[in-house]
Image 1 (cartoon, rainbow, N blue to C red):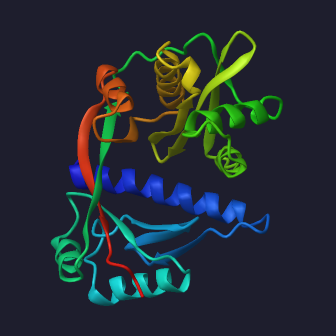
Image 2: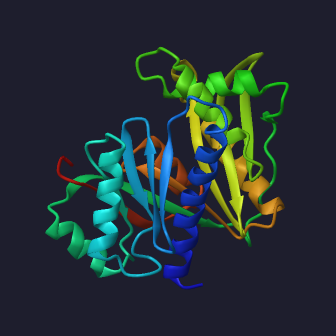
Length: 263
């Protein structure tokens, strides 16, 4: 399969999953996330005090009017900057526009890909499927893994539950004894699986729990008929090194470009 088509599928599963999550959360006010869909070109999301654009330049060229519309929408949401995730396979029109509008590099993201069609993927012992009985402790474990200051944020718990509630997603939990210590999600769309929202409580890291979660979700994706599994990590992290060790290839690196302050 051509690289561009695979990149489209990867960016589509990310964008449509975020879109479905926002629609689900908005059913329970006062959630304030929102999205702008630029037809057949990409999505812009506002979540918290951040806004980011996904998928642009992969299906059709991006015009000056498109970017103007995106920036105007972001200003209307009282967000100061627009972040645009740029795939290296995107049409050059997007790159030129961002240069003309004085966007600068914020950071890079590594996008990994695994072809599971020929892989012997077996379920891993010690990993639970998440259901109504354990979703609360799973969500708190995931939130604790992302709690940089050690304080579990209710918004992170709600985020985990929001993604768990989507029918295309499956959630997984690892325990140490009776304690929920790590978790993650597998999303599936059109033969593509995506691993995300993976975390381990800091006191329990270094024990192989992330590896267990990765292998279990690979097995689940293969059992569901997926050919590929993808995951996005920050550059030069333990998560990225785990992906490479388990057979994922670095498929492309995205540049996340930030706008000047939007007044």
